[in-house]
Image 1 (spheres, helix red, strand yellow):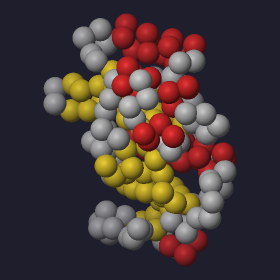
Image 2 (image 1 turned 45 degrees about the vertical axis):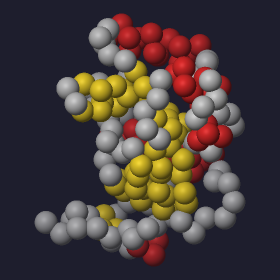
Image 3 (image 1 turned 180 degrees about the horizontal axis):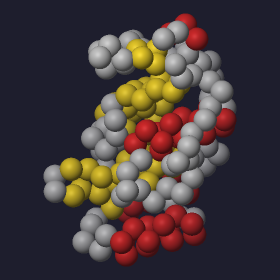
Image 4 (image 1 turned 60 degrees about the horizontal axis):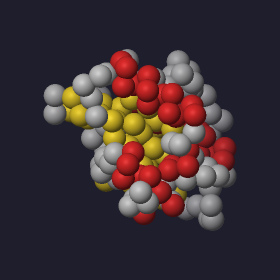
Length: 171
């Protein structure tokens, strides 16, 4: 992935610690995820709960999984409560899930949990809106490493690119 673009560039590109391209699936209902029809359930480290409002996809929650699959995580009591909270706040919406599988540039092997956590933090912080119910990582985000991520596939609910570290704009 080229880490330079017309909107911003990394001031010291040779010192970026994490460069990842995250492939997002098309939105699916929880039933589709639970039925085992999403093969990305085995590879995804990230997920977003989204809804379609006035022809625009809105992100309501961004999360991560590391030691389990999204289908297992979404059966947890906290996620059931979160979905019920969203349904109460947005009674006319249908909520979907989109799963994000990262590809790490110049990485060897499986990423560690700290890397996944830092990318999740950047995803939440850079895409936060009033429609989101995330309670952590929304008012501040700090990381000891420089990160550049690119969202591909179904990325209509997220900024195409996000970076953390020393970046500059051409404008």
